[in-house]
Amino acid sequence: MSTKITLGQCNHARTLARNQNASPIPLTFELLEDVMYLEEERRNEIIATTDIDRIGPLVEYAYHDYDNFEKKVAPVAVGDEVLSLVRTLQLSGITSMGQQTNLQPRRVEFMRAPQSMREFEDARWIAFCKRGENAGREAGLAKGFGAALTGAIQEMVSNVYEHSEHSDTSLVGYKWAPHQVEFIIADSGIGVLESLRTNSHYSYLHDSGRALEVALREGESRYGKNVGHGFGFRDLLYNIASRSCHLRFRSGDHSLTIDGTGEGVKKIVKQCPYLRGFLISIVAILPIQTLQS
Amino acid sequence: MSTMIQMSQRLAVLNFTSQNTNLAGSIPGRNLLAKLIENVTSTMSACPVFLDFAGIETATGSFLRESVLGFRDYCLKSRLPLHAVVANANQDVVEELEIVLAAENDAILACSLSTDDVVTEVRVIGRLDHTQKLTMDEVFRRGEVDAIMLSQTSDEVGSTAWNNRLAALSGKGLVIEEKKGRVKFYRPVLELK
Image 1 (cartoon, rainbow over the protein chains, first blue to last red):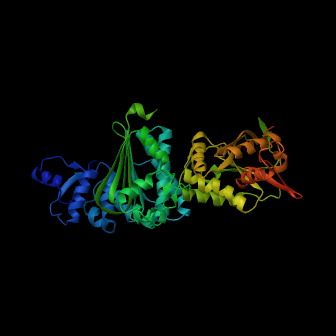
Image 2: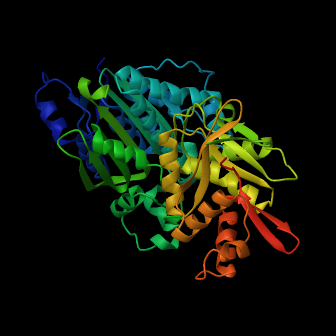
Image 3: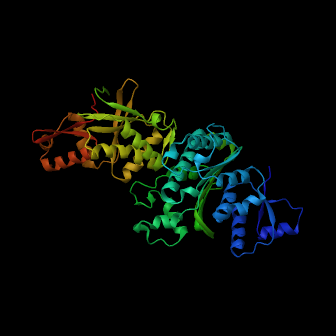
């Protein structure tokens, strides 16, 4: 189902406004950055419509102004993705969610991430993780790859709890369709740069782009270099190199993209509109012959 | 090669993870550590504690650091005669553990353990330097050693050096240290017969 969301003025929006018969354009990260820049300049008088295909840009849009996410997203809430996101963001945590312990994945689902050590063992959280893993399987991912991917997601969620200092704002989500599955993790915490800079070893870091690169390097975290922390991304990065995935890490005024969906694996660090906290988007789009290998 | 363990403890990881077979993150690792400590039985004499990973599909480095190495360190720091041994871990789990251990120049014992407690494939995983590896091999080969005994095997290495090497292995929980009179003896946690 096509979900429509209202966005502010942007180049794409102008094009759309001129041609009312044009099909809604998909909400991509590129379009979103355009919108965010214009919102920052308070130039949002033109309304456009767009399709929600990926949950990553939708969540990034909500987290761009986390405290006002309802004002931005809720008034035009139509469709499963938006409704599910808004409903979940209104909840304070796992304990305020219903007793959903079945393992059948939904098409799209969001959940508040654990906010205490005990919540990591909550049956609802474990079932959600299993549904996420099963979503990968339904999409056609090989069992081992799906397990590694969801393992990496859980690792990142644990990192959010440990490092964000605002795990009450954290969110996890997945969406699947045949041959593709998407995961999202977001928080509106202190962000990667500030987190790393709590360790004097990283006091030299001054921009979020460099901080993202350092954080993703094997064996580095706010605890310092090669002290046994920061191994969580290893499996994921390894899989990106060998499988067809698109990853976007977003914190502060930068994004770091690792794209393995084309030829080879491309890493791009780019300046973006400011986003408080940390957001990770992972999309696996795999051809059938790759899926079962 | 196999050996029957006379006295040991087995803690099945799967029983403490709500049957979750993909283990990730330092917080869940700390949760497991708390349960391992809660469920291990204190003993008077040296005893291997098998952390049984049967049924676990994946475990990330930070999970293993907090749980497995955390438990090993807890035993060492508490001066409990308990020696953590990783049992029945699949290749993925072992590889992840090796990365964590290598980064810290550390090592731990691993093995396969049958349902009737038969131990096979005893090995050290992680990183030992050349002299520590040599010393470990001697402990495995001889069964029980002290520094003076080892110093008699070579004119080049004195008893103090051997003593340091043995103490380093003991500090990683790889060998059992026992004082008899004024002499410290060292023997393997798992014997190869």
